[in-house]
Image (cartoon, rainbow, N blue to C red; front, side, top):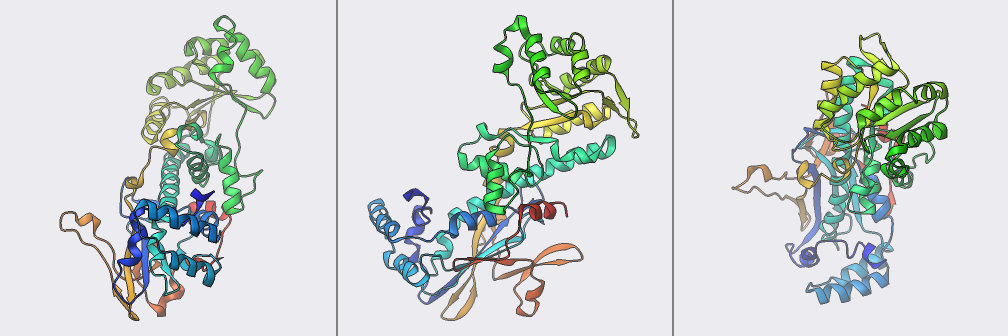
Amino acid sequence: MKTKSIILDTDSYKVSMWKQYPPGTQSVYSYIESRGGQYDKTILFGVQAYIREVLSKPITQAEIDFADKFWTAHGEPFNREGWEYILDKHNGYLPVEIRSIEDGILVPVQNVLATIVNTDPMVPWITTWIETSFLRSVWYATTVATQSWSIKQVIKDALKMSGDVTGLPFKLHDFGSRGVSSYESAYIGGMSHLVNFMGTDTAISILAANEYYDADIYNTAYSIPAAEHSTVTSWGRDKEALAYENMVKQFSKPGAIYAVVSDSYDIYNAVDIWGTELKELVVKNGGTLVIRPDSGDPAVVVPKLLKKLDQYFGSTVNDKGFKVLNNVRLIWGDGINELSIRTILMVAVTMNKYSADNLAFGMGGALLQIVNRDTQKFAMKCSAAMIDGVWVDVFKDPVTDSGKKSKKGRFMVIRENSEIKTIPYDEAKKDLDIMKVRYADGSRFNEISFSQVRANSEM
């Protein structure tokens, strides 16, 4: 598709930038960072995915021919000669070098995450040409992964206090596929969430993790049979119990987990049905029933349901002094975000002494869609240029907004006493740099697996 071409995937004004650099410019060096934002650290993610998806595909003469007509009609001075030079001299692969920290590593904000510089002095403008697509890939994947990681810490703390931490990978389930703006957002954002968790209904995220990070398609993430309102309400209100009974008969067996949305009419009456006429069947079939109550104020509804289910199914008190329900659990999947998760856990665990083992969460649009570049104040800025063989510092320092002051020079990122720091580039210390070459002139380097990304996020 023509629209997938890197020659078209840039901001319109960048098409004219090849005419804007000083005479004698040979290299343009840029970096990506999170300047701050909602979280004080970020889980870097998406660099390898971008390289495989975008930079591993050479441009073609047909793309150049089309782009020439398109950009000229659009009002921009297209650099046909420069692109044909890339096609002829570099076989269509972009002559740039990308260095970055490994995907999955937790990095304090205001540190350099990745750098890019052209490798051929004939095309210094190519560095900033790909800012649009490269920054978009990194900020979105990193922001979703970071938010998911932060929520993971919230749930982990609750489990450490009240339950079994081994269940953590399945406590936040991705419900977000229908809530995003595009297919690409679903698989990129969903894949970013899988850095931290193993539960998803955005199945294409698993395929993306396989395509970009060689994840095992069959053992990376999982889901369970679950009812939705249409399958429950199609039985009719007078046969609500039969709809629930059918779920038990279809999906419950020893070791199995199945979820049943139960708020179509009256969640409290539904729990009465589960705890009376269906209790024996639920217990006998041996699976774990997960009831989904998705209406009302969870701070009110959740404790009421925990107490009702405790009365019907009973509970055991774990070695931390918290109640764990027998045979049944709850999952809340409406209006979930980090704040609501904190609230639900506080009410259930701290105030009512029910273990976090009893609860799971489904998160949709707030997980994959309600983020933007400013959530973590992401930017890609030029910080150095080689002009007539000499590296010069490049930076901005707006008098009206000191928060937008950019870095200058070239950089290394090192670990010093377990702390990640950005320092000026020093050839003598280059072996300490945790940024490694990921792409250069059409070749990929230092690739990692999805399991390694996950391992990085646990460091």
